[in-house]
Length: 139
Image 1 (cartoon, rainbow, N blue to C red):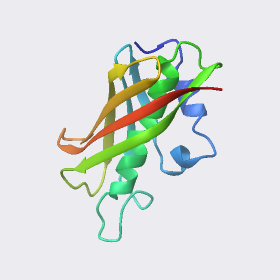
Image 2: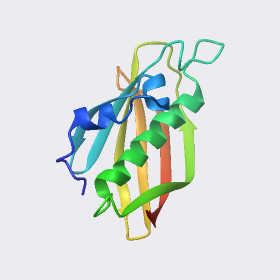
Image 3: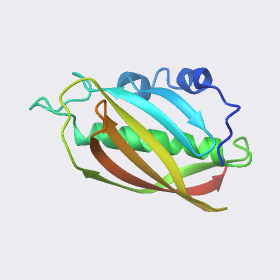
């Protein structure tokens, strides 16, 4: 499903100079049916009460889904994806360490992709469950 010839180094180098780098998101695994990234729970990603900000979880989820599109389309030089809808259920709080997002495709069609992204803490507690719908468009 996913083009695994793209290296983690390549994905992480594409993160320089944008929100992905700013929040400390790092891609850590690519397999044919999933992609994973981790994000620190620190001053960049916490809300004022010291908990992981729900918006930071959504950024991690949309980042994973957007990269999954690049890995899933037939030719990323000809077509790409744009987010149509994202939802997130914030199920548990996190106060420190890292959260790890895992993205799997639910549907990869010609015009629409749907991805499920689950975010866990380091103890494997489910922090957030998200779903991203992406429209495939020509470049």
